[in-house]
Amino acid sequence: MTVGIEMGTTTTGAPAILDLEELLATRLLVQGNSGSGKSHLLRRLAEQSAPYVQQVVVDPEGDFVTLAEQFGHVVVDAAAHAEAALQQVAARVRQHRVSVVLNLENLETERQMRHASAFLGGLFDVERDYWFPMLVVVDEAQLFAPAAAGEVSDEARKASLGAMTNLMCRGRKRGLAGIIATQRLAKLAKNVAAEASNFLMGRTFLDIDMARAADLLGMERRQAEMFRDLARGHFVALGPALSRRPLPIRIGEASTNGRAGNARLLPLPATAPADARDLIMTASEHEPARAPVSRPMATADILAQLAATRPPPPPGEVLAGELAALPRPAPPARPSHEQVLAEVLADPEAMFRSVAQIYQDFLVRCRQHGVNGRALDLAQFRRKLATVRAGIDAETADTPEWEQALTLSAAMPEDLQAVFLMLARAAHDRAACPSNAQIARARGSRSPRRALGLLEHMEGRGLISIRTDAFGRRVIAIPALAWETEPGDADAADDEVA
Ligand SMILES: Nc1ncnc2c1ncn2[C@@H]1O[C@H](COP(=O)(O)OP(=O)(O)OP(=O)(O)O)[C@@H](O)[C@H]1O
Ligand SMILES: [Mg+2]
Image 1 (cartoon, rainbow, N blue to C red):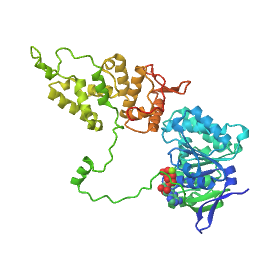
Image 2 (image 1 turned 90 degrees about the vertical axis):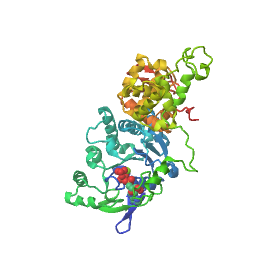
Image 3 (image 1 turned 45 degrees about the horizontal axis):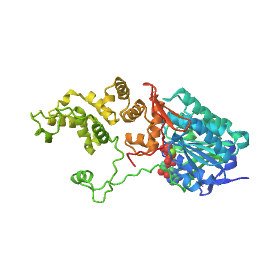
Image 4 (image 1 turned 180 degrees about the vertical axis):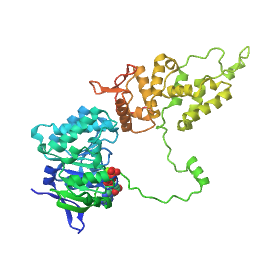
């Protein structure tokens, strides 16, 4: 059976046909600079071939998840599964012949490599009974098969490169047809690129990529100069599944949309600067109320709770109203640094201010209360603030263990600190592991998927280690402190938000 799908049109307006059966045997490499239209091309290919052949799309940017709506691909969120689980999912994908998009967008590079290689490994290692033909589309293939060692660990690079080499070199027998796209041919491992016999070359600027393209296609370097002038969506096709001679084609429309926006300049609205300030500083009449769920931490609430559980004040510290009843007037009570800080943080605007600004507010308030705020310098203040934001009670805050947690967190990028301290606190208290929703909130986000990405990232840096217990609940350990949380449900809702 010969099935030809229409990729677009040639310069004469004739349909540009890709022979699917030939493609299964001979694989395809797409290259072109950013914006040349590679992802669009892959989308067109996936859409046109969806009725005829099973497909897997390895999607580092989450561009292809929209294929699910119209073509029924199952989207697998790689960040939500461990490597071993992904490998099993891949085996089932082959058994049940389901088309899938492996969405890797919520992982940092090293994890993308590990998870993609586990999944590809699962596709590759399945028993002979399930060697049905399928297209395996890998966008941004240079991420998974880099030509040179980068910042990722050697182990991750080897695993990923091995999986890509298997796909392109040994996949055919197992029914796997690799279709890979890259921005930079020079950044893609040579052995992986060399296994494709079909090429679609898009706009290419750099000499080094041009030279690699000419070598692969068996062209004179001079001839390859034509890739420089290609417009977006225009490619030169060559190979047994496409054309025996280099054939310029224009890729046709796709019926689903990518998520990459097409950057266009739009004229700015003619708003006078005076108005502009009012516009952003005042709420308009119909503005929807925004729930205060994305704030970093419900600090004021935590502090209020802490205050509520505080022991009764010593006789000297009594409320103003009761003073009159006392035989001798006592000096007015001076609030502690923690109490002043609680006042500062009670202002909902406080969460949008930098630490330095909060420190300034704190000093002003201290002055009003006659308290020496300068007794805390900015560094000490930063630590106190981090502690309060992580919901640590005053007693724990003074322990040497907690000091150690603070010292560790101080060495981390600021965006990880709140989450790290939250986890450290749960581990210190032997409390249940916080859910993704709770972690997302500590980070100032509503997306549990972001939380997962962040955890993966922290695990990648060795700050935490994650495991699942026999009941599927998550446990997070902090190796440097030898603390570990109790098991918790990662998908539980966040009470604060509900
Ligand atoms: N043949 C085409 N017809 C219509 N629009 C196209 C075509 N090719 C690309 N586009 C549009 O051009 C933009 C960039 O294309 P695309 O995202 O496919 O580029 P890319 O080569 O994958 O870039 P990157 O390497 O940065 O991911 C997109 O908005 C896409 O919809
Ligand atoms: Mg792209």
